[in-house]
Length: 85
Image (tube, rainbow, N blue to C red; front, side, top):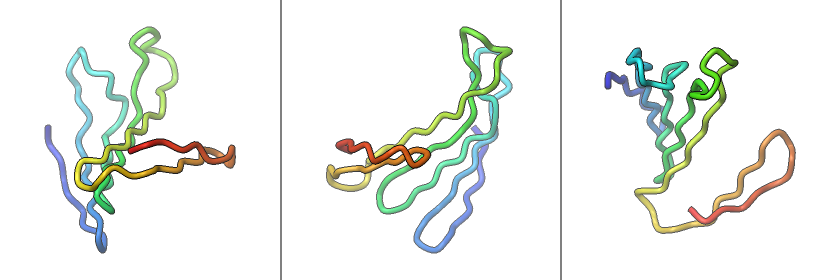
């Protein structure tokens, strides 16, 4: 998978080209922000059930470089949701 790195202060943004393979659900390039020991992946993906429908925004947060921690996430001012990361 082809990608480019863009360093920004203490973080790195990695941009991966979206796949054109027939079995891929990629609808956009993939952006990964690495900061504070976590990775935040953001991309658009198609629905396998309805591939012609509007792409879905997909966000994945991963913790591989720091001890387990609490994560507070707020979406569209809907209040915080807490997760163990």
